[in-house]
Amino acid sequence: MSNKLQVKIKSATRTHFDGEAFSITSYNDTGVFDVLPQHANFITVIKDRVIVNKGMKDQVEVKVENGVLSVKGDRVNVYLGF
Image (spheres, helix red, strand yellow):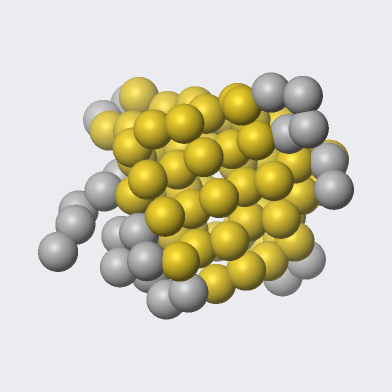
């Protein structure tokens, strides 16, 4: 049982984030959503931004025009600019 997510955020030209996080927050057409460890498998088109919560007040925010976020197990992959 894991208490962290393995997160990778990539675009065609670079890796924006590759590491562990406690949670992910992003936005899709229905609004804001969070991904926590042990989340159900999930895929969605995202917009606006992705916020990676690495722990108390330590976060990374990546701006998103368009992208796809997928969750499988405790792995989150975000592909930007599809």
